Length: 269
Image (cartoon, rainbow, N blue to C red; front, top):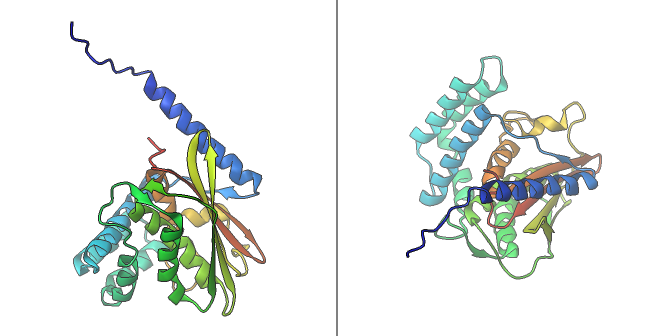
């Protein structure tokens, strides 16, 4: 008699409960360090960030952008946000800045980690060094890296690189000339899941105290002139796909971004 494989549906709630415990464990780790975990993106913001990721992916694959895709992204912003928000003003700027995006496109394209967006073996030192090389030219500071991981990890390098590019860029831009941006990677295991804990610390003046730190993960929230405030919103939107838990701790002596990235990702279901 041929045995028909049995798909035990009970395994799915068990798996999801296990993953939920891992996410809660990551939140507890951050709170133990007095770090405020990031809030989840709402659906509107998530749609916008997914479109931005599509644009980034196009840049990486083609080492360029197209004016049509940039203008389509600007139109998406205009359609999704009310006319009184900072978003609409940035939609107009993005649409007009098509010709000025080449340098940024080249920088993002250079993040390419591998020939496929499928999970592959890599080392954290290689990933962080690649991102640091892209961000180093954005400021006049030094980036110091400490990699306490061993061996290789399995993940989608393209997504990881794009997500970590933004907090490191923010740190470089916030650090004054001659200052040091410190990047550290530690291996951790939470609820049985292997993960890496990445910390990026700048030497700036901290987040503007007039801002609610919970809002920095929302699109178009920033105190920096000539910035759209999309970087951390992009990271927050990528988090479920990456199996990533983020947080920020800000003090007068600087701000530290924390990212706990579970190996192979996809902790959200």
